[in-house]
Length: 359
Image (cartoon, rainbow, N blue to C red):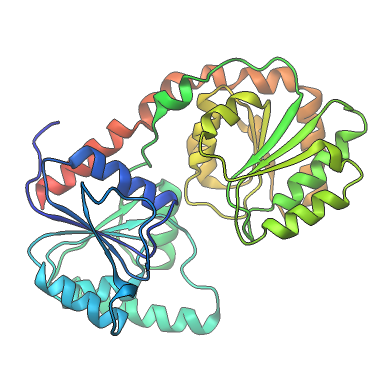
């Protein structure tokens, strides 16, 4: 490791189960263990299902009686000279952190949706207004996980320019399963079964071509609130015998290595770890029209199907991509070396460590 930070580090999360932000923090703990004292604070967590408590102290705040925000203020106040790394905590958590006297917390942006209703927008804009006032004499280090999430934050929330640090991925783990694809036999979806991921469109697209490709199968890996609805849609399909729902898969790199096409038609994403993971195994991808995805695959617009709300356009582009599958399948090979470097865990934690050293 380069020059190491020695200050205690507090990772603040809402929940303490498997998820993108939580897995990032898991990387930090593995990397910085032995160099810094670390604690993970789960604002609404009642249990820890992810972190090794022999390496890091874990606080499940909901197990302690009292107001969530007041307890968090007390925690910040007691540790205000340490490093606080907030992972998508939102403006209220950032405001409490600043009011408690924490110096230069890291506010790590992992999303692009900041309010879901007009009332919520007014309330949260009001909180950001107070934060803006505090920033005239206090410092916050803003970090975004893509240039797209950085731009959305700057345009819609706060006129600051966050530092962009791409998510770190265990590139070697996925590259170990790399092989060029030759024929389309299995198409897949990987990710949360959640509103906005448009898994139902993936099933519809499979049905569009299933009759003409009698050997083709659709494999769905993931869990979430729409799991039962997705399963019912699959069961109602005339091709249900060729649709397999796997649920959560722990060795996802093996799953990527066994399929031939990955569809990811999310309506909103701030990055897209699953795309990098898939491409590292040589798996061609087809995606929705999301700017963050273009940061991953660059000029390879062959991967882009369009906006999820325009199903007819997506369908036409999907059918054309399947017809020219060998061309689509050849593209990941040309990207491998850059993907391995740009999105590596080492590259990510080196940049995070550089921030910690400056604190």
